Image (cartoon, rainbow, N blue to C red; front, side):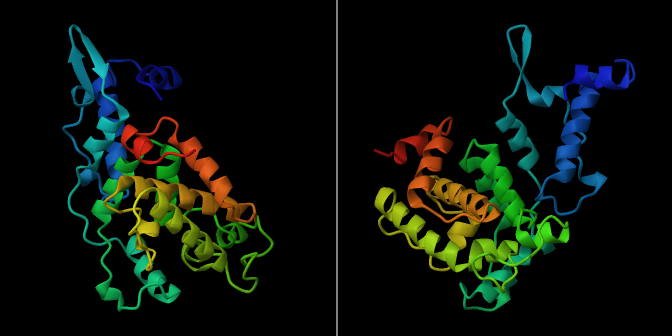
Length: 260
């Protein structure tokens, strides 16, 4: 909502809340709600953010900074050492059998993971979906059953296994078979030495190569889409979505990922 829309909706005069105050409040809320905030406290809100923080001067005009600049401002957060909901994924990785080590030996660098998530792609649909997976609020039969939308919480492939978020993205044989196809696609098009036996790159999208992260982001989005509609996976359909998501994407990714 723009400042003008805000004033009209609530019949507020500029003398009550200035445009500077309005921007500071909006950015403060973003800062408060950011997924990597170590604590959700009003003390974490950056009081120094104002209209000058998000505009740049060009001649006599103040031009709004890009949304990427906004995001960079909000991502400069204190170090995040622990987050219960995120660190619960350690248990999921061990129970899925992908990682054969104790929970304390698994190290998810969530600061780095979220930084790469926000800087790999320009597409907010992919960012939003992956964020929902991390926070375990992406759609699943288990969640839809709890909301009384689905009559059964069980996976349509495994029948007697609950279709949880971790089952969809880490455990289901349908997913694992498709991930093998994605790995082969990456080896053919990007890196012939690529390997993801423990599925960490697939899950975190935190590889040093951003094009690989982009493919895994689209892969996770496609997996969620097909599970929601109870449809099988097809590599050619996945490649079609890859091409669609490349529209408006960063040139570095476009140039390194080409299709005939």
